[in-house]
Amino acid sequence: MTVDAWAQHPTARFLAHEMFDSLRRWTGAIPAGDIPVKTTLAAMDAAGVDHALLSAWCAPEGVLISNDEVAGWVAEAPDRFSGIASVDLRRPMEAVRELRRCVRDQGFKALRVLPWLWEVPPTDARFYPLYAACVDLGIPFCTQVGHTGPLRPSETGRPIPYIDRIALDFPELTIVCGHVGYPWTEEMIAVARKHPGVVIDTSAYTTKRLPPELVSYLKTRSGRRKVLFGTNFPMIFPEHALAGLDELGLDDETRALYLDGNARRVFALPES
Image (cartoon, rainbow, N blue to C red; front, side):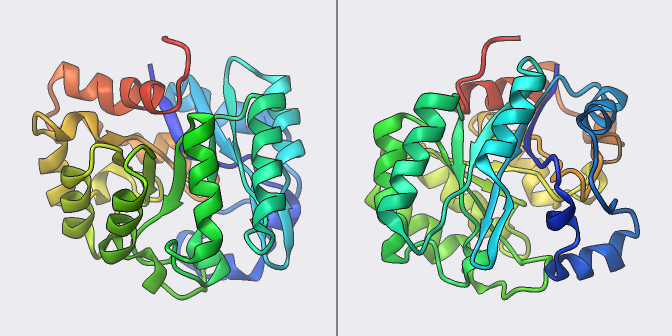
């Protein structure tokens, strides 16, 4: 069983955004135009991915993937998809109300806000009402750590001081740190070791490109419960992301937690 902790079912306006020009240049494989849900499901099936957390995208220039669009796709395949909300950071109270609507009315499992998209660090005061709301709703806050692949500044992705500070201020908050934190992966692992609520997802990295220090952490007694598989589909397809998994040398328990169990615990998904 496999859960993808970070995926998008993309809209045409999301795929066409200029900030992804760098990813198109690197991969040469990002699709374009409107994509039917069956295409995303087929990509999951090809890799044996049972469930994907689909993220909405609200950006300063407008909504690229709306919460209601995500809710519609989840309704088409509720056994295969769960929703992750996105909100307008510039309007904190409206953002809190929208988050509550998504969780309470539509069953969304988490909030994701990308600091680099807004070009402010995740310790900016506008984030704090959202962190409190996540704790109140019992959901994780998902974000990006490490350098920024899209054409935006990278400094906001530093685990230290930013994730460390948030975890100190909100010890009850679960923080899902996507994209492994490279080139600050050691910082990211240190923060995950320090704070019980901080976990790491491997989205945007194929298995063969995972930093050795993260693989070593994944094999430790505590680390095996702290790392979640993710793809960042459609930037990386699940089959490509999982290629070479056997070569990591994970024992059966660690492999099951990495691919499935940790995500089901963190996002309160039904047991497989």
